Length: 316
Image (cartoon, rainbow, N blue to C red; front, side, top):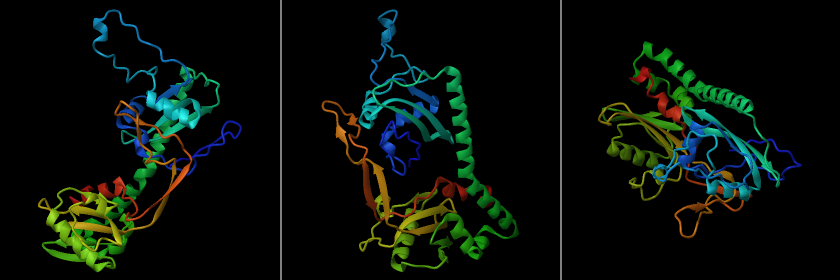
């Protein structure tokens, strides 16, 4: 999802509110953004400088430039920028939990080269990135901390199982679920108001057969659980979070979410994938114009925090 500030004299392209697919930044590129939190491309049209080795033997083992500020950009990324009309760029990584969470991307348009960024200014930008990363991390974890504090305060006065059955509305609010089940020693207890009875029973039986021993969550059950056999198909329930309460997987807690129709506005068609002739590399999208898609059969996405919450010491 994009938020932006644009100089209308430089570009008429607006990306605010549009989504970019995660595949736009492949795994190897994400690793580089984590290692070098400041990346600068002064001029996309400039030729890449060649490295000169002292001897032929020195060239046998490729030089590892992943920690270098001067490392050249990928040709695919250069073409990606060219398709956007970007001549020069600078990015500041936002790192959360040691992973790339987002980017502050600065773009120059037109034929002119970019702005020379001095090393002291690069360090200032790096510091801004760290501050932004820290603030984002605090916001993301604040809900988990509040929920854990709520559970920790309640559990010493009662057993975890008694708390679950007596605090259904609180649990549903914490996990943003519509309803769920608590299964203990073969007995299933409803959490919240049960709906879609047939679908719920089919999912309950599926979870019992799978015997999950680790936390499992999905926003698209029929897509992610290909072994789930329910001939009528799910029309109401789309998401579930399964929390095992026993090593065998026989006892568990499951939260369920109804499906919802979602409209996603993409920056270009994310399914436009063309392979470069003679290679296995995908060509970047040629257009970044708004492309809308209606998504059905999915629930609101579960967050990593919601899955980790049930692993707190209060439930061990």
